[in-house]
Length: 240
Image (tube, rainbow, N blue to C red; front, side, top):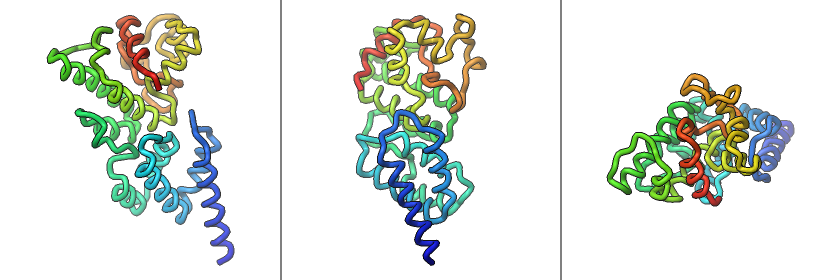
């Protein structure tokens, strides 16, 4: 009995440890701790309760750690814990009901399951749909003059979805930070996020990486073959 109590205490301490930080990215060490917690019978229920409370109470301050834990529970071959997850957080970590006139749940589903290529296509489609709603004009791609029609709340939620379900690696705001760190030089950005190969823009889609192992900022794509002006205006819209 004492060993069991010590194990539970240890698990609770581990959970407290991983939630006391704010993460820009997730280290291998933290990911290993999460894996240890989830294989423990008590631990998986404790950590599910924790992310459920956090999702309900801290919607404006969601963390990438919550998204990673959600994904790991989804991936776990455990029908009991997956059933509880669906009961408590059926649609994911982010409650999208009041976020926008557009329903982004399909994107959340794709990102939870790390289907990044389809998520990328859908993200571009959403952006075109937003502009169409505002201008009553269909678009095959966006020009810099179209960015003004994308509300910041929509851009924020798209960016947040990508960050939450990629361990903080992907998203427009991540790309903007890399761009700024490289003195706003586009060729340096392309190189850092692996959009070029030997100085030439990669071919879509086969030469891009559609897994979580892609370099930081690699996804989502955005007009990567149509110059920099549209992406510049999108970056200028990001103030978070």
